[in-house]
Length: 256
Image (cartoon, rainbow, N blue to C red; front, side, top):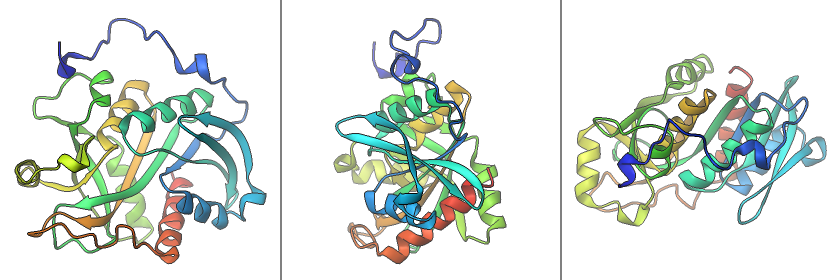
């Protein structure tokens, strides 16, 4: 048996998310998920600051993850900072869904596979290459290795409505960013992948299996599409960048 044969749709899981987290009465249906503490701060700032946010739950991974209830333009949302990678991201999505979340908007940085995509450009992935392990426990293997992101069309239309410039296309999800070899890069780019990141295919498989809505947008940071790797925006994001993405995420979330 290998990872491609890991999916078991016939028997129940031994540990259910509801064994860990109880349902919370009145938990916001729409949840924003981000990756950095400074991005979380900007999301909270746009909603009046941490003093106007209520911690409704604490999730546990290798650190405590507070889940905030906030209000933006009259609509209640939940917000939390997730960890990098498919296993942690999906584990926290499972527990947040068990508390009552139904619609999840995940956003974070990615690497560009096209040198002509400008720094910080937004990309909505509509298919993700499954170069990670988590998705194979939520969905059987795909003939071409890709999984469809069913929410992409809806999110792309919302960004269009908001007049946010965005691209839509395939992404490459991998567990091993230090093993993004030149050969695999060429394969994924030739298949139409615009970006590389670590969570999209796992989150898409989770959404389909649990019958919840997971929306994802990426913003380009480093670039793999030239002759040499370029850091570009990676590690150099300003607070103005963070504020822009936070506002986009909030505006999109209240429209889901």
